[in-house]
Image 1 (tube, rainbow, N blue to C red):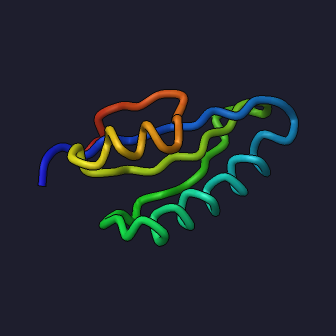
Image 2: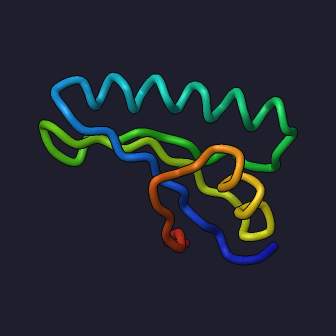
Image 3: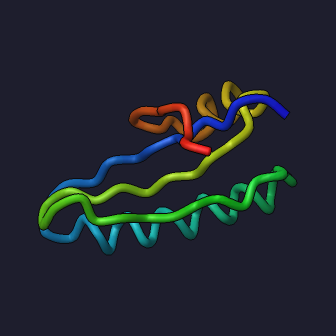
Length: 79
């Protein structure tokens, strides 16, 4: 396996945490549907008005997941 890439979806506004939490459910559904070897998903509040949902994938999956799910940004995941 190669590097791990953290794909991130940003949500803003007073309901951002609830939206990010709900988005994570869809990420988990996608992982099951596609049979991906990936189990690192989550959501996090960065401030009162900014939250994220994320999933970490192996670099080999990154292009196909990116094209299918259109994350807002990505970064190399910390080991």
